[in-house]
Length: 321
Image (cartoon, rainbow, N blue to C red; front, side):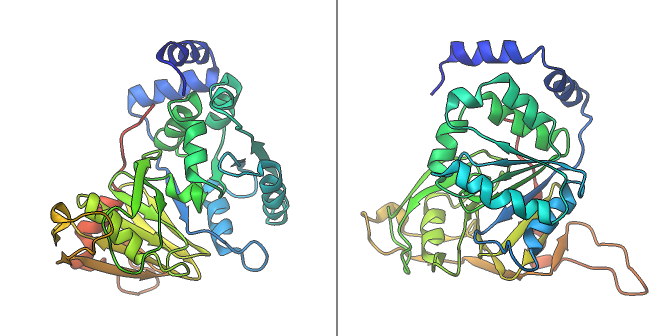
Protein backbone atom coordinates (compact mmCIF):
# COMPACT_ATOMS: atom_id res chain seq x y z
CA UNK A 1 0.00 0.00 0.00
CA UNK A 2 1.47 3.35 -1.02
CA UNK A 3 1.78 6.17 1.46
CA UNK A 4 0.22 9.58 0.98
CA UNK A 5 3.68 11.01 0.32
CA UNK A 6 4.38 8.42 -2.39
CA UNK A 7 0.94 9.13 -3.86
CA UNK A 8 1.62 12.88 -4.10
CA UNK A 9 5.09 12.30 -5.51
CA UNK A 10 3.67 10.02 -8.18
CA UNK A 11 0.98 12.55 -9.03
CA UNK A 12 3.57 15.31 -9.38
CA UNK A 13 5.74 13.21 -11.67
CA UNK A 14 2.77 12.33 -13.84
CA UNK A 15 1.67 15.92 -14.22
CA UNK A 16 4.36 16.44 -16.84
CA UNK A 17 3.02 13.64 -19.04
CA UNK A 18 1.16 14.93 -22.09
CA UNK A 19 -1.59 12.30 -22.06
CA UNK A 20 -2.18 12.81 -18.33
CA UNK A 21 -2.32 16.59 -18.64
CA UNK A 22 -4.68 16.41 -21.61
CA UNK A 23 -7.03 14.02 -19.79
CA UNK A 24 -7.24 16.22 -16.71
CA UNK A 25 -7.85 19.28 -18.92
CA UNK A 26 -10.73 17.46 -20.58
CA UNK A 27 -12.14 16.48 -17.18
CA UNK A 28 -12.06 20.08 -15.94
CA UNK A 29 -13.76 21.31 -19.09
CA UNK A 30 -16.42 18.62 -18.87
CA UNK A 31 -15.44 17.35 -22.34
CA UNK A 32 -16.37 13.72 -21.78
CA UNK A 33 -16.93 10.99 -24.33
CA UNK A 34 -19.24 8.03 -23.76
CA UNK A 35 -17.37 5.11 -22.27
CA UNK A 36 -18.49 1.49 -22.26
CA UNK A 37 -18.05 -1.29 -19.72
CA UNK A 38 -17.91 -4.87 -21.00
CA UNK A 39 -18.39 -6.97 -17.88
CA UNK A 40 -17.81 -10.65 -18.65
CA UNK A 41 -18.89 -13.61 -16.53
CA UNK A 42 -15.73 -15.57 -17.32
CA UNK A 43 -14.87 -18.45 -19.67
CA UNK A 44 -15.66 -16.36 -22.74
CA UNK A 45 -15.38 -18.17 -26.08
CA UNK A 46 -11.93 -17.57 -27.59
CA UNK A 47 -12.15 -20.22 -30.32
CA UNK A 48 -15.41 -20.11 -32.27
CA UNK A 49 -17.72 -17.08 -32.64
CA UNK A 50 -15.97 -15.02 -29.93
CA UNK A 51 -19.06 -12.83 -29.60
CA UNK A 52 -17.99 -11.22 -26.33
CA UNK A 53 -14.43 -10.39 -27.37
CA UNK A 54 -15.58 -9.21 -30.81
CA UNK A 55 -18.03 -6.81 -29.16
CA UNK A 56 -15.27 -5.51 -26.89
CA UNK A 57 -13.00 -4.91 -29.88
CA UNK A 58 -15.80 -3.24 -31.83
CA UNK A 59 -16.65 -0.86 -28.98
CA UNK A 60 -12.96 -0.06 -28.56
CA UNK A 61 -12.80 1.14 -32.16
CA UNK A 62 -12.19 -1.93 -34.29
CA UNK A 63 -8.98 -3.40 -35.75
CA UNK A 64 -6.96 -0.19 -35.44
CA UNK A 65 -7.87 0.40 -31.78
CA UNK A 66 -5.09 0.51 -29.20
CA UNK A 67 -5.85 -2.44 -26.92
CA UNK A 68 -4.21 -3.20 -23.58
CA UNK A 69 -4.51 -6.60 -21.92
CA UNK A 70 -3.97 -6.18 -18.18
CA UNK A 71 -3.02 -9.45 -16.45
CA UNK A 72 -2.59 -8.06 -12.92
CA UNK A 73 -5.24 -10.43 -11.50
CA UNK A 74 -3.52 -13.54 -12.80
CA UNK A 75 -1.15 -15.83 -10.92
CA UNK A 76 0.52 -16.46 -14.30
CA UNK A 77 0.53 -13.06 -16.02
CA UNK A 78 2.72 -14.11 -18.93
CA UNK A 79 0.62 -17.20 -19.57
CA UNK A 80 -2.55 -15.13 -19.46
CA UNK A 81 -1.12 -12.65 -21.93
CA UNK A 82 -0.08 -15.45 -24.30
CA UNK A 83 -3.63 -16.80 -24.08
CA UNK A 84 -5.22 -13.54 -25.27
CA UNK A 85 -2.64 -12.04 -27.67
CA UNK A 86 -3.19 -14.52 -30.54
CA UNK A 87 -6.98 -14.36 -30.09
CA UNK A 88 -7.10 -10.61 -30.56
CA UNK A 89 -4.65 -10.87 -33.46
CA UNK A 90 -6.83 -13.53 -35.11
CA UNK A 91 -9.82 -11.17 -34.83
CA UNK A 92 -7.86 -8.55 -36.75
CA UNK A 93 -6.63 -6.32 -33.91
CA UNK A 94 -3.41 -4.68 -35.07
CA UNK A 95 -2.26 -2.89 -31.93
CA UNK A 96 -2.49 -5.10 -28.82
CA UNK A 97 -0.06 -4.68 -25.95
CA UNK A 98 0.51 -6.37 -22.61
CA UNK A 99 -0.09 -4.13 -19.59
CA UNK A 100 2.08 -5.88 -17.03
CA UNK A 101 1.46 -4.79 -13.43
CA UNK A 102 3.07 -7.07 -10.86
CA UNK A 103 2.96 -4.72 -7.86
CA UNK A 104 1.64 -1.39 -6.66
CA UNK A 105 5.07 0.04 -7.48
CA UNK A 106 4.54 -0.95 -11.11
CA UNK A 107 1.09 0.63 -10.99
CA UNK A 108 2.62 3.94 -9.88
CA UNK A 109 5.07 4.16 -12.76
CA UNK A 110 4.39 7.19 -15.01
CA UNK A 111 4.88 5.05 -18.12
CA UNK A 112 2.05 2.73 -17.03
CA UNK A 113 -0.40 5.61 -16.56
CA UNK A 114 0.61 7.08 -19.92
CA UNK A 115 0.03 3.70 -21.55
CA UNK A 116 -3.45 3.47 -20.02
CA UNK A 117 -4.40 7.01 -21.05
CA UNK A 118 -3.38 6.29 -24.64
CA UNK A 119 -5.57 3.17 -24.89
CA UNK A 120 -8.88 2.81 -26.72
CA UNK A 121 -9.73 -0.44 -24.93
CA UNK A 122 -8.43 -2.07 -21.73
CA UNK A 123 -9.22 -5.70 -20.96
CA UNK A 124 -8.73 -7.01 -17.41
CA UNK A 125 -8.14 -10.76 -17.40
CA UNK A 126 -9.26 -13.28 -14.81
CA UNK A 127 -7.46 -14.53 -11.73
CA UNK A 128 -8.03 -13.19 -8.22
CA UNK A 129 -9.86 -9.88 -7.74
CA UNK A 130 -8.13 -9.36 -4.40
CA UNK A 131 -4.73 -9.63 -6.10
CA UNK A 132 -5.86 -7.20 -8.78
CA UNK A 133 -7.02 -4.59 -6.27
CA UNK A 134 -3.93 -5.02 -4.08
CA UNK A 135 -1.89 -4.01 -7.11
CA UNK A 136 -4.16 -1.17 -8.27
CA UNK A 137 -5.56 0.33 -5.05
CA UNK A 138 -4.65 4.01 -4.62
CA UNK A 139 -2.23 3.98 -7.54
CA UNK A 140 -1.78 6.18 -10.57
CA UNK A 141 -2.83 3.27 -12.78
CA UNK A 142 -6.24 3.17 -11.07
CA UNK A 143 -6.61 6.93 -11.44
CA UNK A 144 -5.64 6.68 -15.11
CA UNK A 145 -8.24 3.92 -15.68
CA UNK A 146 -10.92 6.26 -14.32
CA UNK A 147 -9.81 9.13 -16.52
CA UNK A 148 -9.57 6.86 -19.56
CA UNK A 149 -13.12 5.58 -19.04
CA UNK A 150 -14.92 8.65 -17.74
CA UNK A 151 -13.24 11.33 -19.83
CA UNK A 152 -11.68 9.80 -22.92
CA UNK A 153 -14.37 7.23 -23.67
CA UNK A 154 -12.11 4.21 -23.36
CA UNK A 155 -13.89 0.83 -23.37
CA UNK A 156 -13.08 -1.13 -20.23
CA UNK A 157 -13.60 -4.88 -20.31
CA UNK A 158 -13.08 -7.41 -17.57
CA UNK A 159 -13.64 -11.13 -17.26
CA UNK A 160 -14.14 -13.16 -14.07
CA UNK A 161 -11.93 -11.37 -11.51
CA UNK A 162 -11.73 -8.47 -13.96
CA UNK A 163 -15.53 -8.30 -13.83
CA UNK A 164 -15.74 -8.43 -10.04
CA UNK A 165 -13.60 -5.28 -9.66
CA UNK A 166 -15.92 -3.15 -11.81
CA UNK A 167 -18.16 -2.33 -8.86
CA UNK A 168 -17.21 -0.28 -5.80
CA UNK A 169 -18.52 -2.88 -3.35
CA UNK A 170 -16.59 -5.91 -4.60
CA UNK A 171 -17.49 -9.49 -3.80
CA UNK A 172 -14.09 -10.69 -2.61
CA UNK A 173 -14.67 -14.04 -0.87
CA UNK A 174 -17.77 -16.18 -0.58
CA UNK A 175 -19.06 -19.72 -0.54
CA UNK A 176 -21.41 -20.72 -3.36
CA UNK A 177 -24.17 -21.40 -0.87
CA UNK A 178 -27.46 -22.49 -2.44
CA UNK A 179 -29.44 -20.84 0.36
CA UNK A 180 -28.85 -17.23 1.42
CA UNK A 181 -27.00 -17.13 4.75
CA UNK A 182 -25.45 -14.53 7.00
CA UNK A 183 -21.71 -13.87 6.96
CA UNK A 184 -20.82 -16.32 4.20
CA UNK A 185 -19.32 -13.63 1.98
CA UNK A 186 -16.76 -10.84 2.35
CA UNK A 187 -17.01 -7.53 0.54
CA UNK A 188 -14.04 -5.35 -0.33
CA UNK A 189 -13.45 -2.25 -2.44
CA UNK A 190 -13.25 -2.46 -6.23
CA UNK A 191 -12.59 0.12 -8.93
CA UNK A 192 -16.05 1.68 -8.63
CA UNK A 193 -16.82 2.13 -12.32
CA UNK A 194 -20.22 0.51 -11.82
CA UNK A 195 -21.59 2.68 -9.07
CA UNK A 196 -24.81 1.02 -7.87
CA UNK A 197 -24.20 -2.71 -8.05
CA UNK A 198 -22.28 -5.75 -6.85
CA UNK A 199 -21.04 -8.07 -9.63
CA UNK A 200 -20.84 -11.86 -9.42
CA UNK A 201 -19.55 -14.02 -12.26
CA UNK A 202 -19.71 -17.68 -13.44
CA UNK A 203 -23.21 -17.14 -12.14
CA UNK A 204 -25.53 -19.98 -13.15
CA UNK A 205 -22.67 -22.38 -13.83
CA UNK A 206 -21.54 -22.20 -10.20
CA UNK A 207 -24.99 -21.75 -8.61
CA UNK A 208 -24.22 -18.33 -7.16
CA UNK A 209 -27.70 -16.86 -6.69
CA UNK A 210 -27.59 -17.68 -2.97
CA UNK A 211 -24.19 -16.01 -2.68
CA UNK A 212 -25.38 -12.85 -4.42
CA UNK A 213 -28.48 -12.67 -2.23
CA UNK A 214 -26.28 -13.07 0.84
CA UNK A 215 -24.23 -10.09 -0.34
CA UNK A 216 -27.33 -7.97 -0.89
CA UNK A 217 -28.45 -8.68 2.66
CA UNK A 218 -25.38 -6.67 3.69
CA UNK A 219 -25.88 -3.95 1.06
CA UNK A 220 -29.58 -3.74 0.24
CA UNK A 221 -28.99 -0.28 -1.27
CA UNK A 222 -27.21 -1.91 -4.22
CA UNK A 223 -28.28 -4.05 -7.16
CA UNK A 224 -26.91 -7.56 -7.61
CA UNK A 225 -25.59 -8.40 -11.08
CA UNK A 226 -24.95 -12.07 -11.86
CA UNK A 227 -23.31 -12.80 -15.20
CA UNK A 228 -23.11 -16.26 -16.79
CA UNK A 229 -20.00 -17.62 -18.46
CA UNK A 230 -19.38 -16.61 -22.09
CA UNK A 231 -21.73 -13.69 -21.48
CA UNK A 232 -21.15 -9.97 -21.04
CA UNK A 233 -23.18 -7.13 -19.63
CA UNK A 234 -22.32 -4.10 -21.77
CA UNK A 235 -23.02 -0.79 -20.04
CA UNK A 236 -23.23 2.39 -22.10
CA UNK A 237 -23.02 5.18 -19.58
CA UNK A 238 -26.31 7.00 -18.96
CA UNK A 239 -27.90 5.36 -21.99
CA UNK A 240 -28.37 1.61 -22.24
CA UNK A 241 -27.23 -1.91 -21.48
CA UNK A 242 -27.00 -4.94 -23.72
CA UNK A 243 -26.35 -8.63 -23.11
CA UNK A 244 -23.85 -10.33 -25.43
CA UNK A 245 -22.76 -13.95 -25.67
CA UNK A 246 -24.52 -17.23 -24.98
CA UNK A 247 -26.02 -16.94 -21.47
CA UNK A 248 -28.02 -14.63 -19.24
CA UNK A 249 -27.49 -11.68 -16.96
CA UNK A 250 -29.50 -11.84 -13.73
CA UNK A 251 -30.32 -8.58 -11.97
CA UNK A 252 -31.45 -8.76 -8.34
CA UNK A 253 -33.07 -5.64 -6.90
CA UNK A 254 -33.51 -5.82 -3.13
CA UNK A 255 -33.83 -2.13 -2.37
CA UNK A 256 -37.39 -2.63 -1.10
CA UNK A 257 -36.50 -5.91 0.58
CA UNK A 258 -37.52 -6.85 4.09
CA UNK A 259 -34.97 -9.06 5.78
CA UNK A 260 -34.10 -10.32 9.24
CA UNK A 261 -30.34 -9.92 8.68
CA UNK A 262 -29.93 -7.69 11.74
CA UNK A 263 -31.21 -10.45 14.01
CA UNK A 264 -29.04 -13.34 12.78
CA UNK A 265 -25.76 -14.98 13.67
CA UNK A 266 -23.15 -16.27 11.22
CA UNK A 267 -24.47 -18.95 8.85
CA UNK A 268 -28.09 -18.49 9.94
CA UNK A 269 -30.48 -18.64 7.00
CA UNK A 270 -31.80 -15.32 5.75
CA UNK A 271 -35.41 -14.31 5.34
CA UNK A 272 -35.68 -12.04 2.28
CA UNK A 273 -39.07 -10.74 1.15
CA UNK A 274 -40.08 -8.45 -1.70
CA UNK A 275 -36.92 -9.09 -3.75
CA UNK A 276 -37.30 -8.32 -7.45
CA UNK A 277 -35.42 -10.42 -10.01
CA UNK A 278 -34.84 -9.72 -13.72
CA UNK A 279 -33.40 -12.30 -16.15
CA UNK A 280 -31.96 -10.79 -19.33
CA UNK A 281 -30.98 -13.20 -22.12
CA UNK A 282 -28.15 -12.58 -24.58
CA UNK A 283 -29.14 -10.67 -27.71
CA UNK A 284 -31.25 -8.03 -25.93
CA UNK A 285 -30.64 -4.32 -25.47
CA UNK A 286 -32.43 -2.08 -22.96
CA UNK A 287 -32.37 1.71 -23.35
CA UNK A 288 -33.23 4.45 -20.91
CA UNK A 289 -34.89 6.29 -23.82
CA UNK A 290 -36.80 4.48 -26.58
CA UNK A 291 -34.58 3.52 -29.50
CA UNK A 292 -35.49 4.92 -32.90
CA UNK A 293 -37.52 2.67 -35.15
CA UNK A 294 -35.58 0.93 -37.93
CA UNK A 295 -36.94 -0.42 -41.24
CA UNK A 296 -40.52 0.23 -40.22
CA UNK A 297 -40.25 -1.71 -36.95
CA UNK A 298 -41.63 -0.38 -33.68
CA UNK A 299 -39.11 1.49 -31.51
CA UNK A 300 -37.58 -0.60 -28.76
CA UNK A 301 -38.93 0.16 -25.30
CA UNK A 302 -37.70 -0.90 -21.90
CA UNK A 303 -40.53 -2.29 -19.72
CA UNK A 304 -41.53 0.21 -17.06
CA UNK A 305 -40.97 -2.39 -14.32
CA UNK A 306 -37.28 -2.48 -15.27
CA UNK A 307 -36.69 1.17 -16.13
CA UNK A 308 -35.85 2.37 -12.62
CA UNK A 309 -33.38 -0.47 -12.17
CA UNK A 310 -31.85 0.22 -15.58
CA UNK A 311 -31.27 3.88 -14.74
CA UNK A 312 -29.28 2.80 -11.67
CA UNK A 313 -27.17 0.39 -13.74
CA UNK A 314 -26.14 2.98 -16.32
CA UNK A 315 -25.51 5.77 -13.80
CA UNK A 316 -21.74 6.43 -13.73
CA UNK A 317 -19.79 6.58 -10.53
CA UNK A 318 -17.46 9.47 -9.68
CA UNK A 319 -13.93 9.73 -11.00
CA UNK A 320 -11.86 8.15 -8.26
CA UNK A 321 -8.19 8.22 -7.48
